[in-house]
Length: 402
Image 1 (tube, one colour):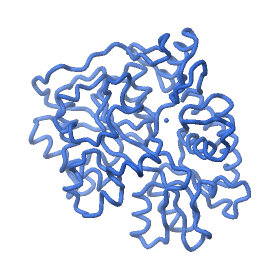
Image 2 (cartoon, helix red, strand yellow):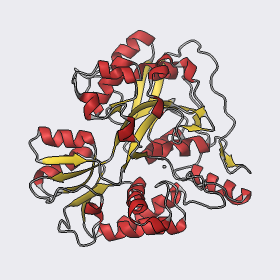
Image 3 (cartoon, helix red, strand yellow):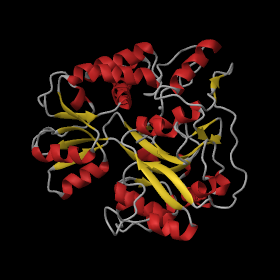
């Protein structure tokens, strides 16, 4: 999970086009930055009414979001949907946000469960269309703090339906790390006693974690938002990550591999998700996960509609289904995240689930900076400043690791 404002017009347009095509070309129209310094997506309109369902829907999703009982007969919210709506579900599992962006550009899919590091790219490129939330009855019960945010809307227009969210936490082996860490400084310390046993999330968006730490520890840099970095701020974050790289044992993207690494002791300290900590603890690994004093990054995933969707009505039916209280509860528990629908907490099998994942706890999530695609317009409100776009984050991350 779950983040520029004015450029000269010509430079702005070029930057947005670079952003839109960073992960492959698109035949969709691209947005631009206007004289007001704001992103103006292509002029696409939301569907005004529902029509006859088309009999199928093609989805791109994170593993665990579209379960049909194939992996576990007890975990199936696809077949009931198909039976109730007549829409057969076809799903393509994506491993990364970049995969999702590339797949959406093909025009073969109707909707995607995008994280914030992909959503603005899809909006800017014209690959995602606005969503008429009035056609999704269960939207009214989505937590207010997830609606019309920087990662799922532009200029007050919704570009999707919030699905689930969570925080990136600091996990450590309680039998090997002492004293108990309370700051991200534990993973960024130059002379760490845990060299070779520190782990970090393998994604360009992790640069924001370094920026967040610098925001609190080096105020002279003037960082106000970890997803809005001018060149000096960006260079400082990358430099910190290069320093950290010498202490990293491995970067992770597969959460089961991180569980295994903490279990074996190859990793004793690093970034994690609540579901990873829960899984490790269930396997008797002595770990604890905390939200550090500086705050943290996180994700808020959004079901977004393709601008080229061939099955619009079935896609809207899926949106309403996946955020219905009962189904949203099932998905959240299976995946390991807070549900988006506030009523879902009444349907979880674990009575403490929503408390464990801090669902609806505004004070907790005020300390979480949800992933948002970095774009040239500095989303912290600065004017006359160019921020480093995501394409440059990708280049820096590749260089840092290789």
